[in-house]
Length: 147
Image 1 (cartoon, rainbow, N blue to C red):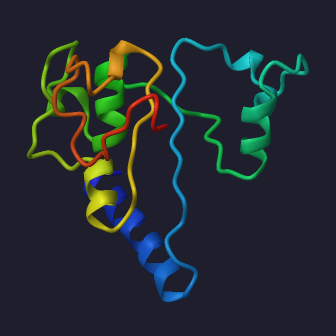
Image 2: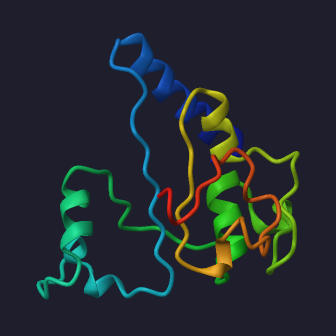
């Protein structure tokens, strides 16, 4: 499925919610890097290691078959947030900017009235650290003290 078709599907879902008088759905994207699926309760672990994620998963859509287009954090997130492949978005490592001409989920959602923010636990994707230029597009600036 092309990136355009995917974004059209998202736009249709949001428009349908507005038409039904429900309002736009809340969207929370949680990505976890270098974590084993067999440690997540919502994916079958009985160890009780992820109670908060398990509770959230009970009320959410969980993608149990997600595949990475590239085994690197920055280009993988560029793929997730633009709907494009690495050879198209050209982000292949730290410091490689995400082109402003690409569709970008936070910017699209922000333009449609969503309050958008990123809460990042590592330098790898922190827009303030500028290690991933262009990833801050469409995000409301946040700091740890305001989060």
